[in-house]
Amino acid sequence: MIKRETIEKKITEYPIFEYAFFDPAEINFRQAVRTICQIECPQYGKSWSCPPAVGTVEECENRCTSYDHAFIFSTISEVSDILDMDEMLSTRGEHIQIVEEIKDNVFGEHGDKLILTAESCALCDDCAYPDGACRHADKMYPCVESHAISVTDICEKHQLSFMNGYNVITWFGMILF
Ligand code: SF4
Image (cartoon, rainbow, N blue to C red; front, side, top):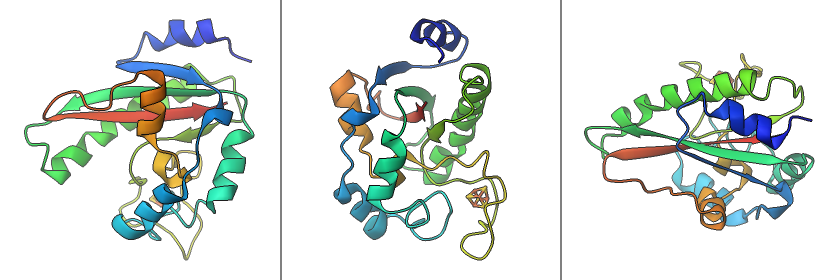
């Protein structure tokens, strides 16, 4: 089991804004978060990284709480216009690259871990869901909300900021291990 001090030392090599450790048992899995996915997100039912493909709220809860530890971290990106969705989403790639590096270089010794990030997976131009299997299951990270988890809940509990200024995007990644 990787020690917290080791993670804290290694994480300084990456442009992380804030981070926190917590017990997955603390997470409130909310049906309301799932309902928002269903009603408001255009990606609902269109990706292996989103509901309903990720499973029921109960299945997501069981998956997350099967791990002993959770690590959440944020990165920030500045854009010229926060209302420009394309520009906003274009900064997600930098965040995912950092997630990939942390996965390999900080948590590499943990074979079994669950990684949740932000927004729907965008690795393929056209997601294989639902007709074929995910093409990159080892690099496909569902978003935190897909697992009925409210990031703001966790931020409030652990004094992480999710609003960091106008035209600043705060991206979150979560690793359960
Ligand atoms: S890797 Fe491709 S097939 Fe898998 S969830 Fe992402 S977009 Fe869909």
